Image (tube, rainbow, N blue to C red; front, side, top):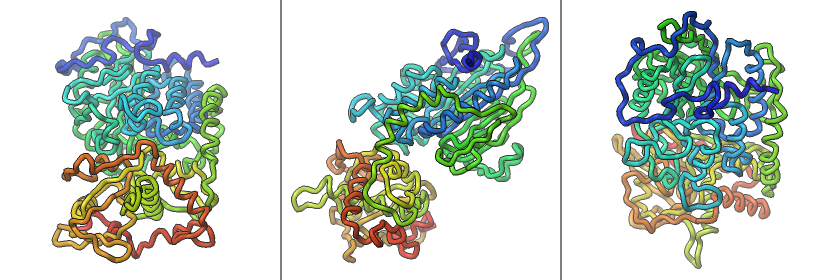
Length: 602
């Protein structure tokens, strides 16, 4: 029995002893004047209660890590068992919860919400990948945020997104359980919680799935909400945000020398008024942070439940005419849950104890995830009929064997799906670095391995472009200073520089140059085809230039082509009947010249 577990875990509006107090989720149009030290005390007591420890536990970028949920629950229970009347836990998440594993994706994140309800989360931010499922269920039309709205409604805690607005307004979308901020009470102390989404969401989500939404500057949003919460009596303000940072040395919170201060979370916190917020749980960058920035404890803990963040606050409750306040703060480095740091559930060996308490995955959480594991098992183990000679390595901002392979498979898949009569379905194809999420392991290839490498349910698509438009697209992409790099199949791309201006030439496999007025079909994902990654920014394409297959998921098209390769057992990329990554990638002869350094014409 763990009755005390639920005392700290239940969220806003449940009417229990630690439920949200007045003002929960309020979002008036203009914030009241900020009041800190001069505000009326939350409570007046003859003898103020003793200070207590508030342990803020943060997760981020779980990406459907269903198999790790029981282990994390074991850590949470271990911390819960340490309570001796003067300690409380506050569990928060910084977004990108659902998307990323077969176990989670097949139920559009339902098992993740079930587990988070059991664990006792108090709030979560809305990450960009929360939008990936689009309409609820198998529908490709209807409410573009249907799946996300369903998951949010099922949560026993609020999702917070102060900078997510209905398009053209200053109001949050009217979704059940979505709020800008909330005010809760813990151990007699009012704690304000604010959520943020990355303002870059429109550039990295399928445009159709964020229809009707605006993602605005987080600084005014965080300032407005935190100021309001302080004026309503918040003694502690915590932000959970799908906005992150990056540091490499994590033992000394005051030492920022290993931190990239250009990261979004770092820049944001340096602009926030000192004293306005106490803790910032970050995410999105899949990096680690455990530092103090402008007086704020900023933490982030990798991804896929490899680790969790922790900040311990020693808090003086209000009394005798004085407000509650934070007396001390301890920022912990990310707590890795396994001795193995690979992030793989199969190699995870947890320590027996955490801070003197046993770490034992609870049986109820193990039973809770079992249906999701069984649901995914047969699909994950499905063989694709070929073997890989050695690991096919991915690259995000550099060309890679996996990028070339996925571009090749996209081209073949589009030719199979779109070809009619004598007209080929596609002339060339591209794959984006942001869509490559894991290496393909050596050995017999399964659908599960392919899914891990490409966990997005994007449809296969094609776009009609002239040679001049294709050259313009590649030139703009190669002048970008960051983000995922494109991989290409069907043409070679050469680039020459005239000052800082690139000149692009496309050459077909037979050596023939593509003319500016030639019309070609480019195969790609529907995410890219509809403007993702800003691929066609500044270009006006007619509506009939974009064709999206309504039934064929790009990953499944790739699986079909891989199986066909396996049956044939031959081809340019095969060696002794095995797919050979060394024949997919040649660092001395890149398919896009100079793609290993961007911008190509500095």
